[in-house]
Image (cartoon, rainbow, N blue to C red; front, side):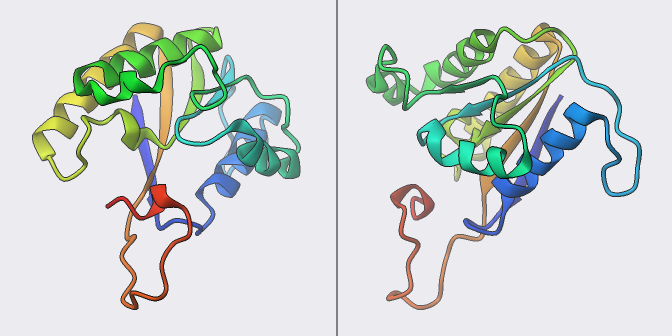
Amino acid sequence: TVNLLAGASGVGKTCLTASLLTQFRDQLPIFGHPSNPVAGLGYICADRGWSSTRLWLEKAGYPDIPFYSLVDDLDFDPDKLYNKRALVSILGESLVSLGLPPGSLVVVDPIALFMGGNLNDYHACAAALIKIRRIAQRLQLTLLGLCHSAKQKADAKDQYRRLQDRIL
């Protein structure tokens, strides 16, 4: 399956996710409910280097999670991201590179990079999500895609610092 966790930039999606991954790994209750065991856990960083995300996972007690970062992969050609039809395939290759067994949970942060090239284009997003879901089914993975929402700020002088947080 594909699941989305959306929130404004900086509200704590990565922090929450790091905590959830640690609870899944240790089979601890999540929000008071028992967690089901998962075959494996992984993390894909799509628009930033691994070091910034690793900080949250270290604080949560899970710095050694299997991960892949497009930014840190010097063999990955960023020009491929201009091909909107290749975006889902890039995600598929990233998922395969983790080498996780069926029944694993993978966080994709942010998943929007792979959702058709224009988040304001409903049809492109829907088609991409259908393809992503099929890849997840074929690999027998559950994906938790983090995505930004509510990025607009009323005061033009009060902007988000990171460019990727201001895109929409």
